[in-house]
Figure 1 (cartoon, helix red, strand yellow):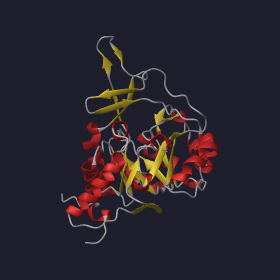
Figure 2: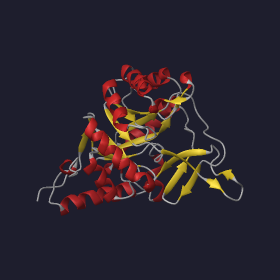
Figure 3: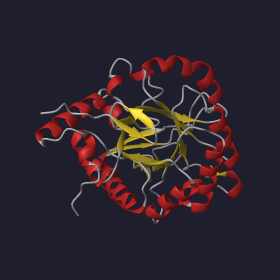
Figure 4: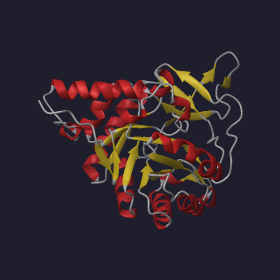
Length: 304
């Protein structure tokens, strides 16, 4: 039997596998050096980066749930200049594509960030549009098509790198948002971002999280994420990075069958810091069992 290949290409980015890390769950990669084999990763998506340093939200910022976790980190990060000057020179040694997740308060900030990150060390930018739009009264860019499209266009205008849009699941019609993203010129789509949730302490009668609400991730969101990947695959031709509750190889395979071209592992990194390696091995084993030689052989093959 021919050698099994997990190599793939996403929006022009050559990757050793279709397994990526989800932003905010893998730091800048350095934190996982002792656990993950970076040669098995398709790309490292670093934590959300902003123009200026941010200290994040006050109070409790992570809470475990019965099937996942809530977080309200608040985009704590050292700022884009520190990433460019200090962090990117250190992490380029991984010989793995680095994708930077960026967040802005205005359309102009996204354009500025995309321009600053148009450097050799960065393979692509991923737009986090679940942030409040200051000029529009605090409405998140990702829940309104025109605002989202303006962010994509601003980024595309200011970079030669692929622009990935990370879609929010907190919308009525995810396919409509995906079509708008494609029309605006996005090179790829990642979905889903976290669902909004909350937890309450019944002893104090207060919210558990300092920010009251937070993003829900982990196994609880997987059925929603799978459904949205499937819907988006039918709506657009752009490459899709599926994510949401991927805890093992079987979960990843479900996303590929639903139409994802790659997957991003998030919450599982906190549980098993070497989980990406296990998923890689699991994918190889699965393809072998099915007498298949290429990961592309299962993408979008859901028989529905």
